[in-house]
Length: 424
Ligand code: EPZ
Image (cartoon, rainbow, N blue to C red; front, top):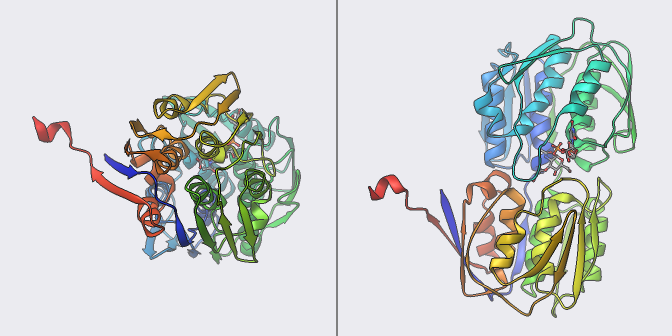
């Protein structure tokens, strides 16, 4: 497993082109299962999670081909309905193939996803919604077996605006008989991107991006060519890296309209932000100021930016409070930050961050995709050279993150971790 050596103290400057949104591309890939033929998705990030979703599609009989960031998916041979544990274990988002498989084949067998470092990651809202649509489930040997001979529309109210449940139910509803309404639906831009591709394929959807999504089921779908929206979480991660180094960078192909609250918070912290239709310039010429934030479903502050913001706030002037409302254990990385000299205390869903002048380099671990990015951000502002271990977490969600940071002036070096076997 690789590790990253990061020597702090360099200001980031220059421009970086954003990749397509991981949390949209994965679902667009699943949606291709609805249509017989060749779907082309542009701007797909070349990251481990998308490669894993490609393996899931291949396991179902589809053929995938990458050409740069353009992914071609030929589903004409796809007849499979099972997603095995060894793939779901690598990426729990594989569960979103359930919706399209039910819409197309009225049956599916998907390994139940486990928990991860940020929470139990339940799927009860998915199951409850599907049952309202006539799906019958049985769980055996860690697999969810689903059958829905008469998959029909339903009125579904989600207890929580779950992104995955909204997407899974949406991809079943578009092929169900009759009308579905998903109330308390998630409103993320990635949901809107998925809905726009489904509509291009022939689906009848109204209200994606609002709390009530209405769907009229149809029988067939055409394969299409669709371009993934840019990754707002990646954009914000680079923005926070720039702020922590008193840098000045331009984010190319950024959608400021997907980042309003995040940009507000960085503005409150003292950043200077200039946004155009397709780019955002962000600079910080002094030590940032403390800000408070709570994570909420979109358009609230994204939970996927909580760790990166925590890293930035650990070196600001003043004391900040972060409240994490979306996942039940997304503060596990705080201990790693405190090992670098941060002064953060957590109590339940709250973290109190007292800004310190400088962090100091230390060997630290990446606990998940976003915590790993947070450790790298902290290391950019630390005295000395920090070793960030378990880089594969970061590689799951960011395309060449270290290479692009280096292009912005960061002093980073990737090293293959000596494997114990090699030393024996
Ligand atoms: C998606 O996960 C994202 N992943 C996550 O990004 C993101 O953090 C999350 O949405 C929230 O924005 C992908 O899109 C691949 P949820 P998802 O269902 O769909 C609870 C990253 O780093 N819940 O909105 O799994 C759940 O436990 C990843 O890119 C239930 O209780 O998130 C959590 O507390 C991390 N029952 C909350 O809802 C359910 O059936 C939000 O989960 C489903 C969810």
